[in-house]
Image (cartoon, rainbow, N blue to C red; front, side, top):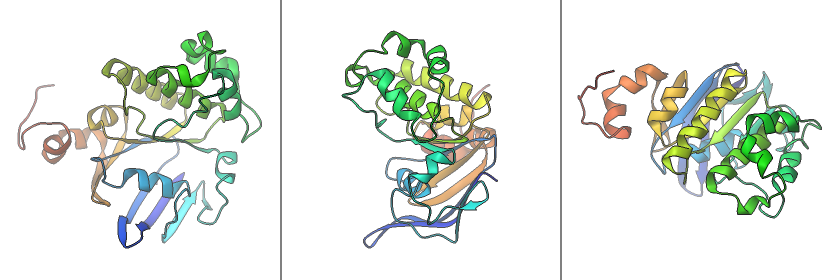
Length: 238
C-alpha cells in the first residue's frame, strides 16, 4: 500500500469538513475521488499532504507514518501534489517554473517534459502568467513530474478549462499513469475521472458514500443520477 489514511478527519472550528474517512492507494494505481463542490475533496487532499491540520488513526506513505513529518519532506520522498488552481509562479518563465519543480529532489529531466509537452517547449521563454488556462495546467503537471514523483496527487485538474482542453489534460493524466506513476485524482468531472481510473471513491458531505472499481461506479445508478446527469434507474447503451 503506497498511501493509506484511516479515520481521517478535518475540522474548521466547529465544522467537520471530513468525517473520519478511510482511503488507500496501491502502488501503480490510478484512483479517483469524485464528488460535488463542497463535498470535502480538497480538504481531504490538503490533509493527506499535511497542508491543513487533521486527526487520524493512521496516515502513512510508502509504509512510513507521515502524520508528523514536515511538509517539505513529502516531495523529497516522492509524494507530489498539483493543487487546485495550478499554483504556478506567474512572474517566472515556463522553464523557470519547470526547474523549480526539480528543486525538492535535486533532479529532473527538462527535455523529457518538453518531449511530453511540446507546447511548453515552444513557450519556454514566455512568462507563465501569460499562458492560457490549459497551458498553465500543462505547466503545473510538467513541473510536478520534474520532481520524479512516486505518487502524484492531482486536485481538480479540469477546473476552469474548455471542454477540448479538459479532454487533453485527461489524456495526459492517463499517459503519466501508463508510465508507472501512481496517481490519486480528485475531480468534479466524474465521467472522465472514472474512465481513466481503476478504482474510485465517491465523497458526499465529508464522508465516503461509495467506493469500488471505476467501471462499477460508472454503471451505478446512484452515481449516474448524482454526477452524470442521468435519471435514476436509466441505462445507456455502450
